[in-house]
Image 1 (cartoon, rainbow, N blue to C red):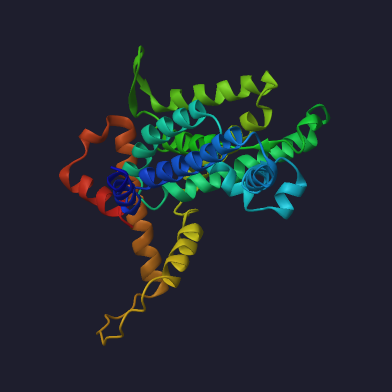
Image 2 (cartoon, one colour):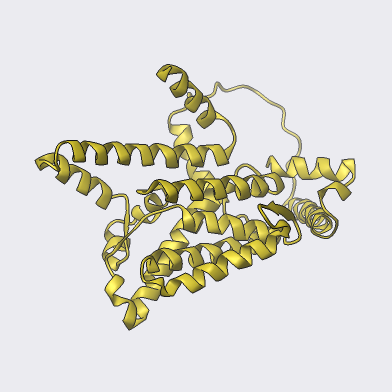
Length: 300
């Protein structure tokens, strides 16, 4: 039984679905932390094990301080994969699944994980800056922050910026445009800043929202903010991949810079026109040729 579950998780993780990969990583980290907490409870918080768990959590959660940002910069990424409470991870993963599928369908599989990471980093930096700049919030300096919410909010806002008129079926409400879902989410975060219980987290959501908006604005201009992160992933993957055998190939004449830029601009303009058509009339209004163009673009 356990082997079947492990193999199923492996297959899901190896799939080309970035939504599944993010969910698997978040759930795996949550289970690992939960096991630590159970063992602490059963051993009555004894000795070295307690110290080990404390050090582990301190080095993966983000401390809202310049110390945390400068001396432990990796925590601005790792905190976005850490959850302590089951309902926290449940709602984050459900929201990630809903909006992540929409985002991937209309962009590409190689943009979701970079956006999630960028949203988390933006959330950490935004919460740190606001808390440091506003004297009344100084009490929250050094507090640990965990959760995927900043990255998930970045995906929600990015999807809404790209497809504002896309309609979602909301429970008890019916069809709602994506832009209204995103605006409502942002409004809730703004109102919750004064809740005292999760100030850093709600500020991080707003930072993630800002990143989601900027990501799509730049994407429409032809600037792919996901590219540096994907290049880093490819480099890491290359370190563990076998070297390809050399073979002789006949290359076509390389394009000049002017030819390349012209082709790229024409392709991006065509994609933007298709996305505008989707925003106004829905995906079903596309012709077969337009759907094929969008599909090919999503694979790049």
